[in-house]
Image 1: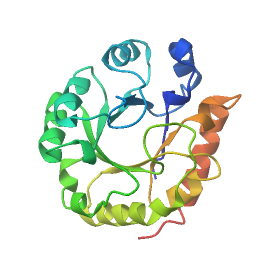
Image 2: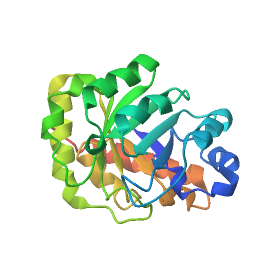
Image 3: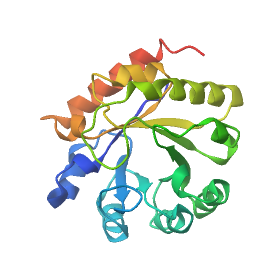
Image 4: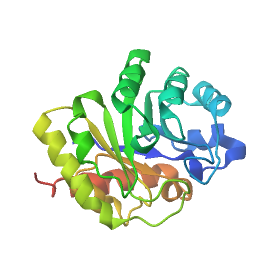
Length: 224
């Protein structure tokens, strides 16, 4: 099974992003949290920084938009050349139209749901998406504790993806570390956003390898 580790630069040293991205060169994607202080109570970075990251990152960018008016803004971010753009179901008026627009531009279309948002209405729309992001913390801040209560939702999404036969990635974001990644992997996740557990490690490459190995071994325990 493919396991993807996507370090979140929310936990990186913002004064040295190019060097920080180089530290995690063995990862799969660079996860970039865009927050607007409106949809979530935090402000991080916007288009100019994403455009700069595109120039210096050897890894593809996985943008996670925690911003209002996703229908308007998600395509603008896709046009930076992002590999993947994930927007929140709670911030979009028309999730299907927005996902289709992202794909037209050439980005993978991801749909994110907060811990309390029901995934069921979106599972009927699986062909429209390339990835579902099940938030395992309330979006807005790094360093929060993993919410185990989101695992049944993840399992349900995993079963729906398996039944559909589609190649839809299942991503988890929030509190992912060597202590929690096996739980998420066993529930069906295959794409893991890790912030402080990777950027806080002395040797980021070793930490990425450890997380990958733990996720792989736990995935074997996952049965539909």
